[in-house]
Image 1 (cartoon, rainbow, N blue to C red):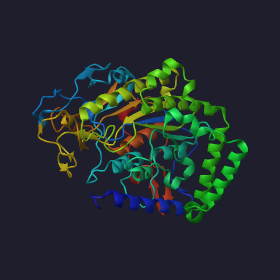
Image 2 (cartoon, rainbow, N blue to C red):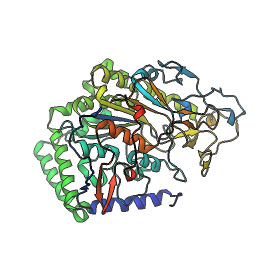
Image 3 (cartoon, rainbow, N blue to C red):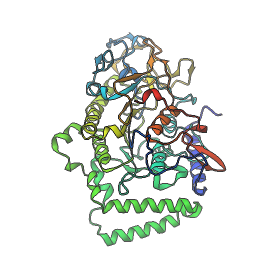
Image 4 (tube, one colour):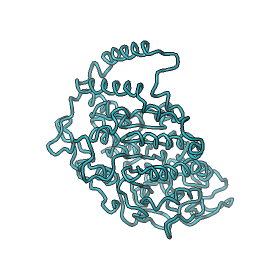
Length: 475
């Protein structure tokens, strides 16, 4: 296998996979498939909210702090393990990095994983690792692998037929690596009706579910008819299967139904009480958490809220790691804690699983893993003469932190451990992406052998159907 894919090769393979998905007929439910339209009797969750820290969130600067080393001009970079002080959480002996105290106060309601290990895929590209996390499949694939949200939408169906089963909040496709990001924001062979309903800006969520200003119902209906004609003359219409064409039409019918429903008011954040709104109002991500809560109340099945991946911004700290994270923590700390508290107070947390994750972690000195280093991408000097070099800049795949709340997850629990000295790698209970996915599926009542026949071979929710849930995470 080529372990040094560049972006062009990734896109070429992804485009080919998309065309293969279009040409495929209806995915044939395997004999062992767990396809059903509701959570099983043994399920502990009905809804999943994924809080995606796009860009590579450093574990030692967030939920797994190490020895604090303050900045000094001309200091040795190898001395730095954490650039923030550690602060106590509600759990005895468990500390988070300074700036995350609000989340620390609700950890009695959830589980902290400190041992996520990302895959070895050669030269590190954010979009490839994000593809792997969201689909559980290493790119490129010969077919378009479905997003985990699409699998859940397909297997369980909508909780509320008017509300899209899979909603994606916060990611634009007009920024860097846009096409690579599109490659995994798809339902693939499962069909468009199970793909994400995109809301790039949650503050404008209401605009996503109503016709443009000045367009009356008759004009909108004419546009809908024109759209159907365009579909028939598009690549899907020309090369797609009957299944894919019908799936696309059903997705449009669902969107049309939402326009005329009372549930569409959930997208209007201006109706949120001012005091509550202000807690969430830390930027797009914070308001995305508020919208996720409101959509959970209305019956969304899977909601993704992202800090948004844009190269060299957000968590993608190729420089100014310390100063950047001060701002990133302000964006996420209050809204995430409030989301947990709100769902708990409303009696929804027991059946709603919240997952906070990132594609990999970061370290100042190691690119990849200590025993599997890859090509350096950051010019990190050994001596730190400027504050912009103080922080975690390289991509580190041998450890990472995740948070889980609700939906049958243990409360006040810590899983896994990392070394206290560099390299701060996983040393106890490593957990990989297929285990993460299968733990989520297990909580939802989706069986581990769920699969469909595509291109005359079984395609499982996790590769070869061999992924197993981590039962220690479940209550």
